[in-house]
Amino acid sequence: MKRIFLLISTILLLFSFGITSLAETEQSSDSEETTTIDASTFYYDQFDNIAYRNVYNQINNAASNFHNSNTNGEYNDGNYYIAFVLSVSKKDWDVIGDKGLEQVINAVLADHPEYFWMSNDFLYQSSTTESGLTYYLVTIKCYNMYANGTSREVAKNNLNITVGNYATSIDEALPDHIKAYLIHNAIIEDVYFRNDILEKTEENIWAFTADGIFNSKYKSGLSSAYAKAYKAILDELGIPCIYVEGDYVLEDENKDEVSTNIIEAWNEVYLNGNWYIVSLSLDDPETTTGKDVLTYDYFNITSEAASKKPTSLVPDNTWLPGIPECQGTEYSIANIQTELEGSDTWKKSNYNIIDKVFDTYGLSVVLISIGLILILIIALIKHIHKRNSRRRSEKIKNTKTRVIDNTDLDNQLRRPPLS
Image (tube, rainbow, N blue to C red; front, side):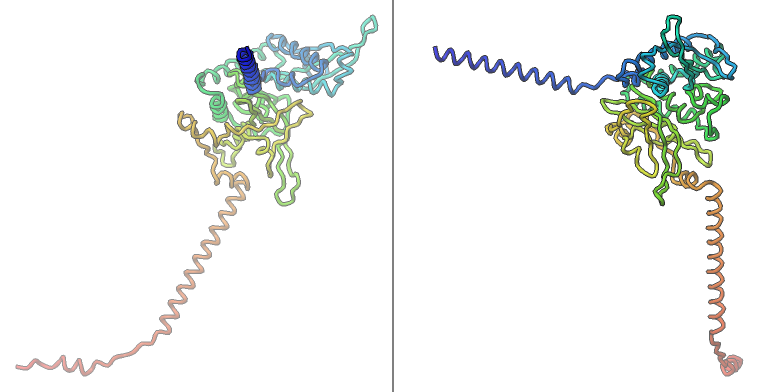
């Protein structure tokens, strides 16, 4: 009887241990699963307050309706066009205020690069219903050049077609990190950076939007245009990608002081559980010689690498909420180069040391320097030649000449031969 009891106890103990181990295995497996990221609502998901989410949804719904229509923007005497007006409850407004509204609008535009026509400029005013209920009217502006509904619809359709063409040009069987690499290269090869546009105006607003990249009339843009276009295509491919804004800081290497602080936009891509920084505009540098170049200095790098002096990318978390820290290294360009070469998709960077010298110091400075160097070389050659000539002259001058008297030998040679 004791043996039977002991056997039953052992079986129960083993069964209990097995159940516990299975539960721990399932829990471990669940914890290792990659977090699902919905890039189309990424910044919406960062808002943990219902008031922010309510207003985000109001703006996004109204924007979607306007985007998918050919309705003209409503002209206002203040020389701007209205896309739509919405009512925000006093309850929500008391939570977000005008600063919170600005952040919500930025979040909508960052999540939806297709809203190329939508300005982040807005107006608001309080109003009261007949029953005494207070609410806030928020006016969202449409850029002047996109106010015409028919023209905007053409631009929208062109954007959709171009994004689709980029996406379908990529083999579906390829892993996400190679797809992201190929799109990075394709955009850089197709467009160029507009270094001549220094400030935003109604006439050049396209250069700040995805329309600048996808519209055959422009095929160019600034960093925000590159980043929005890259996000739009990766969204189409189902690869999590977000739009980020911040500062591109160039520091004085000698004085360790900030010398230049430029508003910059870039992307963060989510691959196999990790975030990576990608900046197409910085990988498509403007060259002094006008040469089209491709680099990988800002492809799949970490936040730490992006923040190294003398240049650094500093995200603005007051502009957009919850920007992730990028720590991924598995798919850095150095780690995937062999794989790319094996799949015949690798393209070597063609930005060499000569390009960097020209771009760092400028064409005129480099040419003047080369001219001075040539002058010094010619002067040195002349100096060496002159010195050698002088030495030869002195050597000839100092050489002693000895005259040999050959009279007796001549007389002997003149004698007739013996008969």
